[in-house]
Image 1 (tube, one colour):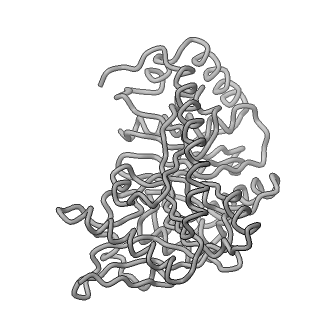
Image 2 (cartoon, rainbow, N blue to C red; image 1 turned 135 degrees about the horizontal axis):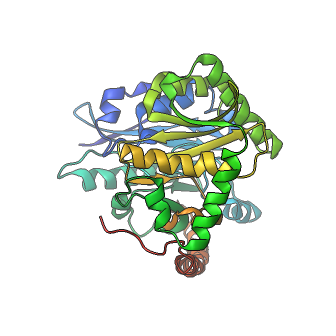
Length: 380
């Protein structure tokens, strides 16, 4: 018999047991990353996040798990359901709290149904989704949402779950020897624009470097968090990651954290923060206290591409949205989510809306590919 248990903290699940179920080393699904979010005050009920992680147990042993949260709003998810919430509440229902299977503040495709890799993986993934649905029905929640799923997890969601997809822009390494070889595969206009952007930065007097998170001092991490926080504040957005979270990134994840830094003298004046697995670089946050043309693109994209080439990484996923990434060598990739709405009438209405949305998304993805920046892509 499989027993489902819910946990109000990731710390209640041993790290070795959780991580043993991960199918890859995507850092966002690691026990260390999720525990760091909770321990440093990023997961808070007054911000709409309550940990409610799911574990499946056989004979007392953890055999499957999923990062779960009770959500009091839809902030920090990057799969937007505000219109669904509004419609359900206009009809007299309570949309919140809802149940979310995701990694907070991280629009990064990766493992959401942790079930190891063996003959029973699919069976256990299906048991996880069934347990989520049963919990929502038992607790009279409006819905369950699973965001940024891996392709090999989609089959675990039976047909009452609504399918939704979006587009991100990812860079793929085709065995490039260096940045110049990558640049040579782009069409003339895109090559020229990138060279001009990089020339602006090179002539600015700033020193650009890539550093591992474990090589930075506490004072440097504090300043990096200040850049992140001030950039969010300048745009009127909420900076959800605390200073303690940033300090913990260097201590806990070490070289799995990479930073592209711009210095004026010894002072860090701009940064882009990345996380890294064995084959993928993930772009996350940017901050700057100077306004230099092209600096954002240099730190957030070009330094990341160069690092991926040097390190032999296969992909660079710079984050959600942004058609401007297309001109810089990032091609459209579909991302996937699944949604279970408990009320059937509500589910049927949203299903119809999603069918129309899916058609529009297909057209959008096809149109994007017609504007590929590549003149040719080398065979590997």
